[in-house]
Image 1 (tube, one colour):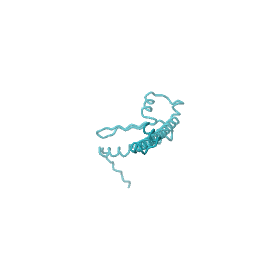
Image 2 (tube, rainbow, N blue to C red; image 1 turned 90 degrees about the vertical axis):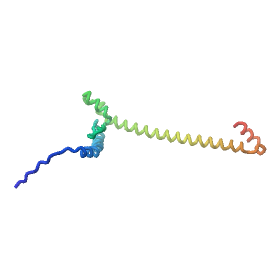
Image 3 (cartoon, helix red, strand yellow; image 1 turned 180 degrees about the horizontal axis):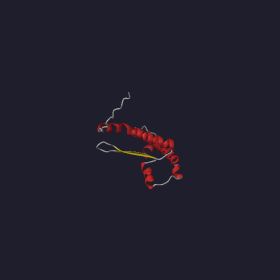
Image 4 (cartoon, rainbow, N blue to C red; image 1 turned 60 degrees about the vertical axis):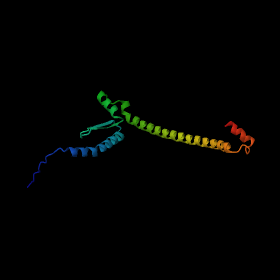
Length: 149
């Protein structure tokens, strides 16, 4: 009284494959990223989309080219390569610090621009006020200021 299982024929469907790929490739990249971070390994994943356009999707830690170069050269792991995860972490720290410094620089440049505009408006406003006044109403200091500007 054992029932036999029916053999299911596997059929390829391009639409199904495209949908499956487009839904799943980011998940694979996320898993590769987690693996690289948690285990301190070098990871590279390259996919060519099954659709007609054949788009290429890649992920690499620290980069696809560095992992591919090491793989193609056939280098055995050495002490400097083994510490690549700590170097990668240091690179991330430095990139974060660079972003913060760029933001601080941009904020300082914006503040400098606002201060320059305020100074120009203040000086220009006083000069315009003096030029619009009647010369008979101006005192000696004001006349000297008009002549100097």
